[in-house]
Length: 282
Image (tube, rainbow, N blue to C red; front, side, top):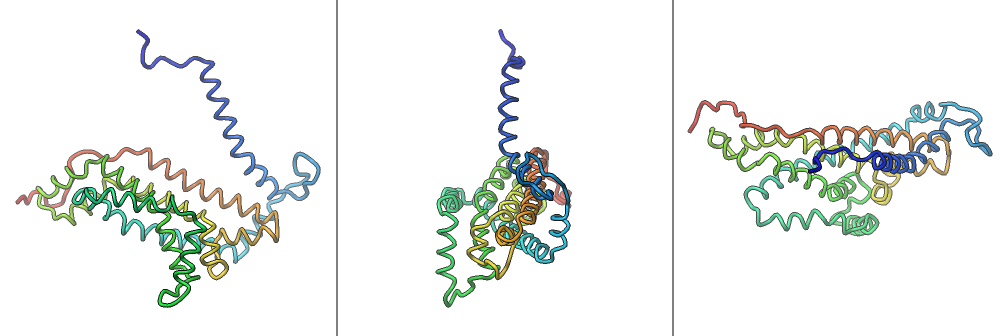
């Protein structure tokens, strides 16, 4: 009988490695070319640039307009993530444990962003919020509201999977037997156990919002210039500066995804929940 863990043939491993390397080159080659162009002094009819300088990056990080745009992007992404977690995590928990018959409706609602293109959503929001009594078009709040809808699927799925992995029903029952109220049990028992999933949802949502362009450009544009809109404006002004912006932007998103992968590989904590004052049983 052939062992289950028998090593794969050498030819199969070489083929898989070759395919993975080809895909990696295909994905990273445009970024490499962009980086070389951002540090080039002259690059016309040669394979590699004829000179190198980091002047574009020095000018980029010395540009107050870029720094303000970067700060606005972080602000919008952070507020969106905080707003999404504050609403969705308790909602998913209550529906999953206490009102399971509503879960199919909640799943349908969170799929709306996949069925509604960004351009259509932006036009509809502009029509709705550009006239009284909802005249908030062009402000940060309409953008945060649109982003809240955009990240719903990611927050929902990550939170729901975490609740299933830790068996939240049994944890709640054990905490209540030890004398904790439902609110205290959720905050002090459920949240610590699903925290890796919540952090993954936060970072993934943050990176998606941080890189979104269509809604930001159409809903707020230059009235609240975020880094995506800044990049769009710079593309027609300075090619090397816009290339440096792209590389910097990609590096920031890559760091966020690295955190997502690192935290996502952690296993949820197992065991009996710990509740302060558990000696005082009912």
